Length: 216
Image 1 (cartoon, rainbow, N blue to C red):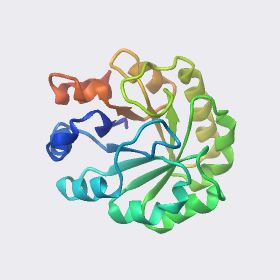
Image 2 (tube, rainbow, N blue to C red):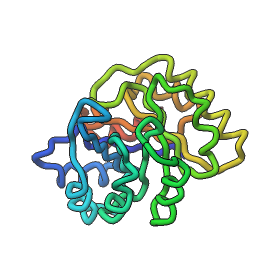
Image 3 (spheres, rainbow, N blue to C red):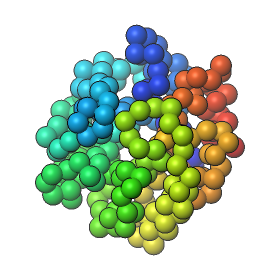
Image 4 (tube, one colour):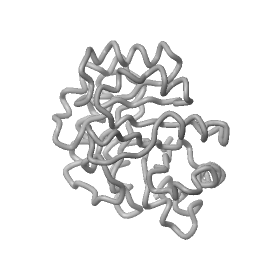
């Protein structure tokens, strides 16, 4: 089943609570929360308090994507704040990645790992027993509204095959530049969780946009 995870990075921060409730009503399966620290990526977004404040507004799971250096320092706090899925970046962890992924699960959240567009997909193989989801970045992380990197389709096929051969039940998410025009290609490549920011939040009808991404 394909899941749609609108990214609130593209929402109006002044009315974030209403934005979260609206996309939940309009059919979002997950709410994607991009946490950036201005160090790992060249942008600053939000942290614990935003997650804690929006958590009571919806029953839709919060898919929290940590684009921060040394995310292992903050695992407890993000899960305590309300993260249902917690994604760390392969490139950002300074300690043992497997231990961090195990800790996420032990604290009651689903564990996920992400890689940047220039990181070889083969690095993911050793972590498959410890993740509930893999997140492939199809733009360079940091800012919403970027153009989809075409090579991501082939990378997605490689990751999808890796997951299939592992035998583990792992969701496969993609984030960056996904539109109604290219979503079918990434689904055909094996992706089943679609992150979409601008495509949803700039749409005249968000419900139609979410439905179109799911069914195209």
